[in-house]
Amino acid sequence: MEWIIILIVYGLFIYGIFKLAKSKNRDPAGWILASIIISPLIVIIILAIMQKLPSKKKTSAKKRKKVRKKG
Image 1 (cartoon, rainbow, N blue to C red):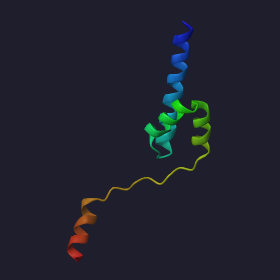
Image 2 (tube, one colour; image 1 turned 60 degrees about the vertical axis):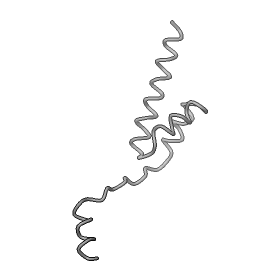
Image 3 (spheres, rainbow, N blue to C red; image 1 turned 45 degrees about the vertical axis):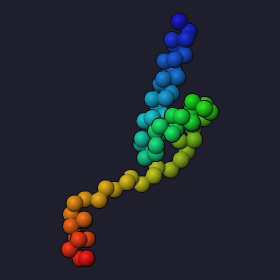
């Protein structure tokens, strides 16, 4: 019974790291791997302190058309 509780708590830490990394525009898989290697609690603290990265803007079809017309 204790192992089930430990796995549930660990899973909740992993899920929290995933959501926090996504909200900060960072790679969730890398941060989850780091939490498995180091400690989920330390990784959550590090992520909470870090600044949010700017979101990656995808180039739209309109921008590509403007570039083609100029060149």
